[in-house]
Length: 369
Image (cartoon, rainbow, N blue to C red; front, top):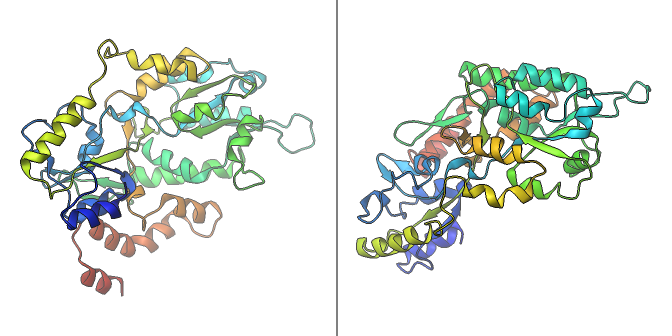
């Protein structure tokens, strides 16, 4: 059920659901509507219990009140890791598990990524044009992961749950500039058809591709074996990073406190793991059949679930602030990183204040003029 139905039915005093499942892209609207119940008031659950997703809790916090929940560790469904074709790695002179070994040793860095990309990009038939490239040219995803992997975000959250602008932080600019420099090296390939990114990987034209955990189903019939590792880490980061995003549960504030406690009691029971499947590593059972090797599960997916590894890029929740739009302009040389950032600061400030619920419609209109 969407945020519009949540708002309309709650304002009418007759919510069409006890719990609304809202995509994180729309959670700002739900919170700013003033119609979501403050879950810290509940007497039956503790919103700070480790059972509840801490990234979602931080995202839905405003001045100590918490308006949304999600279950599970943030990295349970990691997004934008690196899938790699083992055959193409071997043909380029690497061991098939080379990226796993780099990741395990902590040496899977931006600099190592460029070294690997240079060796993977090969002109096999000698005609002066590469036949195999290192990676596909999906610059929006690449820019997003460049920022997150340098232990920063374009837009962040402060301690009170309000969005803040991180665009001028040195590590953010460093990440954008590194992404620009990488694409200028010629190790990436853009598909002939705009929707042909996945086919570059399955067809053996690129040795690596950024993908989500569920993309393992995309490559299930691929003849070549493949593996899955994190994006390489930047110089400002100590650990690897995955992007995460969640659907969020919100309860209308038109229910009484007693009714909300009844709803949360049922939700708490429903989200408990089944007896016999609640061990710390039992989640792996369902993952083994989906991947081509155990290292993807026991090393990469296990690492993604560790505290602090999965991160949210909060600009994705604010339509007016887009890494994809920036990547497009910078990638095609209509803007530089700094010229784009400088040109967008005024509009972004208005967008952030609006997202934070700090501007009403009249003030927003005046600020935009």
